[in-house]
Amino acid sequence: MNILTDPIWSDWAGPIPFVGRKRVRAPGLRFEDLPPIDTVLVSHNHYDHMDIPTLRALEEKFSPLFMVGLGNKKYMERKGLEKVEELDWLKKTSLPGGRSIYFVPAQHFSGRAPWNIDKSLWGGFVIETLPGQIYFAGDTGFGKFFEQIHERFSNIRVALLPVGAYEPRWFMGAVHMNPDDAVRAHKILEPGLSIGFHLGTFHLSDEGIGAPVQQLERALREHGVKQEEFIVLDFGETATVLTDTK
Image (cartoon, rainbow, N blue to C red; front, side, top):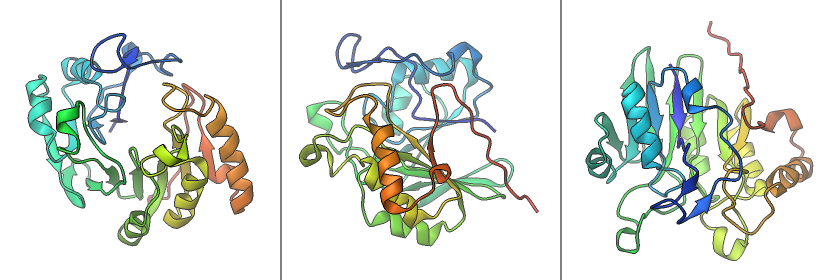
């Protein structure tokens, strides 16, 4: 099963081209080279996470299942997406092969225009499989909900945690983790491996484009976490996680 999280192949993150933020790096994988996509997880409706041109292209080529938070289904159906399922926090849907997907809390907000701020739900996802769980945090600040997720999902093999778009802290701190926050979340969740994301593609905030990786290395040292336990992949790089299926 092939799953995408908040995919965006567009050159601009915004309501129309040339309005919003321009991509500063090409996608690590060309759209034409994608394998068959079964499911697409969309954490919330901000333009850099719910990219309608990309979702329409995926619909046309693969007709996948789109998973979203409450309040997003009707909008996506109006945009031509056929198989859309929306979930409240801690609700789940079943997938083939004994898999389940849960929508889980995050500390963020939603809105694509001034008149629809917080009219739809945001969150992360936990993919439950027989070998273990995969956690995709979506866009989030640091909060006590990480402890709740750890209590409910105690076999997280891989955690995908955002590490970018965090400065200035007085503005971003409540809704975007910095690398130190992400390492603290890693220690609470106790996954087999954490992978940092939400960096290096769109310049969304005040820190330098390469700062998240540098600050993550420092945070790992300060918290006594081994470098191999929390990694950032290069663009187009692949990580294979071996699991015990006995």
